Image (cartoon, rainbow, N blue to C red; front, side, top):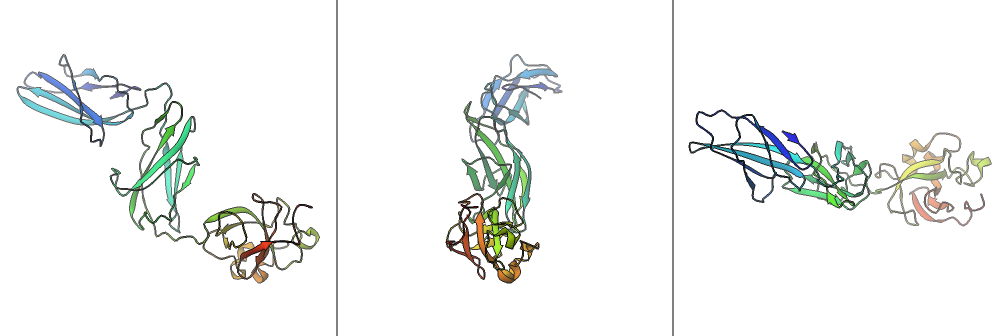
Amino acid sequence: MAIATCNISFNINYTSSAPVTVVTAYYKIKGSADPYTVQSVYPVPSSGSLVTLPEIQTPGEYELVIELTASGVVTRKTSFFRIGNCSGSVCKEPTINKVDVLDDGQIVMDYTVDTTNLATPEYQIATDIGFKNIIHFKVDFDYSPQEYVYMNGGNIPDNTVLYIRARSHCESPSGVSIWSNVIRFQSKRWIAKKAPYAFDDAFCVSGKFKSPTNSNEVGASICWTESPLQKAINLTTSVPQVGSYIYLSDGITPATPANLGSFETGAASSGFKDMGIKWIRFESYNRSKIYDVNPSTGLITGVSTSFNCNAV
């Protein structure tokens, strides 16, 4: 078959001992409950002839049934074709490159979207390849090449074969792309994170030191934008605040002294295993504020009244 933007053409090949008197084409979007569009092919084409269907305006994957009648005997053959967007600009479908399922059960979709005139991506997860049983979907969000599927809704079963697909919604011209390729993957047991909010710009000083801003004592200042004091952590709240608990970057392990071996890199970044985190600052959020931390629990207890980064 030869596919144009809005047209489909194909060669019809057949062998018949009796003359073929009627040729009819039936087509509709694959899986649709809509009736077939019926197109009589006249004059009756000879075997090997090229047949072109009328222009099709709706993009999508179509089912095509060709019916031949000879001496009252009807023969049918089914095939499929795809039609793109028929406007001047095409709302191009995404490509799903791969799906990773992390050890904690987190599903991560790596996909490529043409951001030209993109309004929003959309994706669906189903238990069947025909997407009759859709268990999760998302639309109206900003595109990022790696999409971390929201796992806390309780609708994604553990240890189950699942299918995922995506499409684009475009602004100009307004429209929706056809669906992307489908990726099959198997889920794992989801281990819910106690601290789901990640921050990779947290600067931490241990209780080993007396002043988090004194670079002569510490070897670095908590106010510096780059230093060994920068750590990746998770919080129990979406923004840093009094009452937040600090966890390691897995979102599961509390940032208490016994768990802070990975923070120990020597010099300024030391004392964590024995004395815990005493102060913390976030470069991307209220960057001048230094928070006091209870070293034994990892709880942010307040905004420091003794130290800040305004004067540094």
